[in-house]
Length: 332
Length: 295
Image (cartoon, rainbow over all chains, first blue to last red; front, side):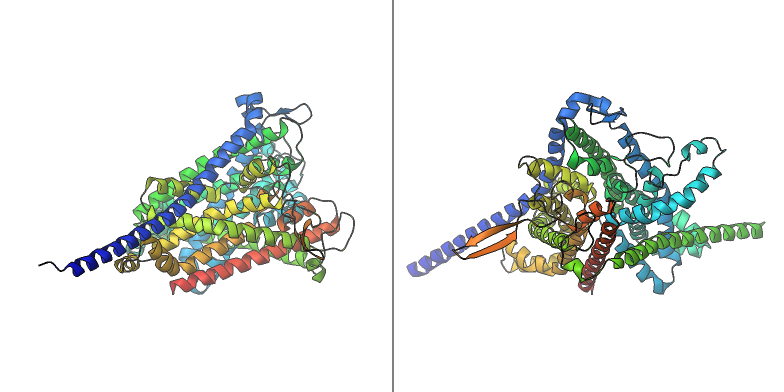
């Protein structure tokens, strides 16, 4: 015999349960879609940058084509534009900044991981990280008011004298001392990316398993040998990745450079002469640019900067990802 | 022969270690010099007028930075209000729903590129979508540019923090019958709260010093544009106009430092001191917040 009431109860409970599950599923679907849309917005911003830059640059792309990359004239009056001096300035300032900042930054990281007295380790480490967050305009204003005049009065005349009779170098360091120029901009950039490189390198060094270092020390290696033969090879891809990230920042850095680079659209062999970079030219000229081709040309230059930094940052990521996977932190 | 080898190795060791100490001193000395200049130069013009008066015109002395400070506060806070929820939702998708999906791989890659992409290009992007079509610079455009910088920072920290939440917490909550969105909102977000707040604070620190993306979006303003909202017949409220150019501290520093006026240089330094102080305070607060979580 069948108990009808019990069956009905069961059916009602089942319906209840079913309704709740449907409600849950709908709520979850909504939430999931919202998070998905937010994630997709990141892609949208990225695509938006490429597309709007390409559209904005179109008149200049049509007018100048690839020659834009190799032309050195920059004449708003006749509307002849070429980005070669900017691209040159961007690449040279960043390269010089890396030459200074990478060894010094790695030196600081070595100091922090191996040599620093225990009591100083945390304060100095934190100081380096805090300094990495100082806005770049601070470096710019300091470079403009303090560093450039000092450099013009002391170091530049000395460099010019020092290399006066050395082939090649005499051209690279030819006078007059302007104070502002490619070389000054590179040094300010290197000071700016220094804390960044140190902080990343120190973190990467920390991923080296202590047992490797202890084994090397146990075999009688000196501190330097442990760093050079064990720690650096182990963390190589991370250090390179960190340096590439810093390079990405240096390439696109605007405010620290704009103040001290000189904003001159021509190429001079001398590193002491004023030049310009893509970001500095955009920052200086964009708001006042008139005419049909001026703004598109600046945007075209911005598009070029975008592709350069994209390549650098993408390869930095590939290197850091590889490191992550190897050190077992591959959950990201 | 062994002795010579040891001597050489020891020699090389001390040479390179000395060099690394020298590097540390060199690096820290530069940064100390910058901070020293910032404090000594910045204090020269610092007085309460800075916080009560508008930026002066070229050639006149006096005045302060209040319009720039207020503009920075308004634009940064609205950018955070817009960017944070989007960033947290995006990071949640990466860490919870789409941990291994193709979209996540792409978003992660692109997000990390946006994190270090030149901020001036963000400015160009917003100029193209929000300034050029409207024929005018506006505070809204500046806010959008800053929000576009906030989003990747918050996405990255949210994802990292959610990854640190143990899966057993999620499983326990799910076993009680919670749907997934409920698990995320009441368990994982709560467990990762301190870390997410840290990320937001770092994002604030980042945008409060940003200059390049504001140059041709918010443009800057030597005064204060306000709109009036009439509330009935006799009552009207003035509020900052978001459709006009707006001042911000970094923009004032940039413009005043490049002017020929000595007094404006002083004000630029003072503005720089205020920004640095604010950014360092924010980073320290963020750090304290973040370290509480680890305890």
